[in-house]
Image (tube, rainbow, N blue to C red; front, side, top):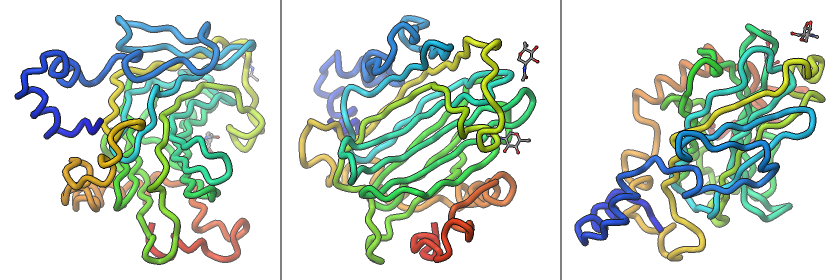
Length: 289
Ligand SMILES: *[C@@H]1O[C@H](CO)[C@@H](O)[C@H](O)[C@H]1NC(C)=O
Ligand SMILES: *[C@@H]1O[C@H](CO)[C@@H](O)[C@H](O)[C@H]1NC(C)=O
């Protein structure tokens, strides 16, 4: 179903009370759109299912997944990350198609740190099985003190990762230059909290301090607007979806200004400029990312 504003309006006009309720009720509760995918003993619903708590301890991490897959649209949630000494923990929020070696995948990974040191946000984009496109930024606030909004926006023109509406990464559709763009495969929405102290913090030098466990991350305000799969096949190509609108085909001047600010002041790693990894500049980097 396209949860476009127009379809909401139409549903409401038709007087489908239930649809109006759930539509106006966005953001949704956890169980409307998601299910527990890993270690249900480690996920607790709070506030009548409007929020959840994820736990990582020495026995397990945990994760959840959307009930449906989506093609295009916008997914956002508010997350409050593990506070204090979170080194070696990774909280991830991502979309992925379940098509093994030709998968499309859009990743946010929040890499914990020693107390008082900044969290790192790593993003990556896989298109048709090709990844290795890591970028890293340090956040301009402490993401464990409060909830902040993390979103993935995806239409035919570009993919935009945002933090509190500030774009931190843009992956353009460069199909015209022969570069594959995620477009045909629906993706599910996932989140996990797990241990990755072999690589996450200072390249694996900083280990998890288990005496600080359990570690908790919190989520709320789940919002998915997109073409649900299974669902009407015509949805993804419909020009009436709000996310395909003229205003969403490139960053607004204000968003572009903020994006430049992030890249200038907060970017700490960009695969595009990593000559030790890629002696030949990846083509999408030349095309303007
Ligand atoms: C942790 O803090 C150090 C020192 O400020 C910084 O270099 C590093 O990028 C931070 N993030 C991770 C994941 O190590
Ligand atoms: C781990 O946490 C304990 C308890 O807070 C502390 O005493 C110890 O120094 C910490 N270890 C490291 C390696 O930070």
